[in-house]
Amino acid sequence: MKRKGNHCKYEVSLEKFLRQKKVPLIPTNEAKKSIDLNGDPLKSFDLMVLSKGFFLLDVKGKNFGFASAPGNKWENWVLDIDPKALLSWERTFKKNGCKLKTLLVFLYKINFPEDRNQFVDLIKMGRDEYGVVAIEPRKYLKYAKVRSLSPAAISISRKTFRRIVKPISSFIPALEA
Image 1: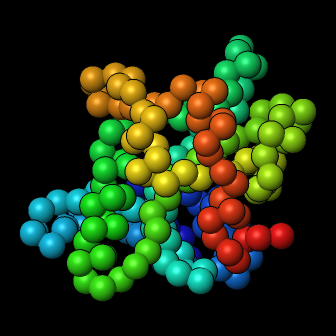
Image 2 (image 1 turned 135 degrees about the vertical axis):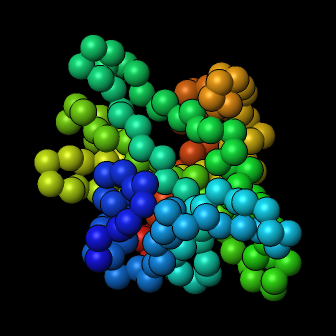
């Protein structure tokens, strides 16, 4: 099924990977606006995954090094609304009796083969390969600092991010080796 709305190659790659692993999932349609319990607009998550519990995923795509800056790794900035929206979804589901986990999922396009060993979880899609890590939004916010005011973005120091981020398989049981 072709996704509609504002979806990038990172989201599509993660969705295809989860489908190959036969992990039940529901992709969102970002063209339709979501609302919370009060009827207020709420940023959509990208995927809902079922694997011994429910997971709401917000997918972020980054390059892992560039030809002009090969040491530029572990970039992790997000819009400040991203982790906050996931926590709002968590509260919304909890108020309706559903327990779930929310995750910011980072897919890093591996630009240099020697960087593959930085990741436990790898996705190969066509010519591209991605390393996949995840972090809970509450933990992300605990370590995040303002990156820019316009757009309102936050990030974690790369050294700290590398230390606290985990392979996505450590969260989603169906992806364990």
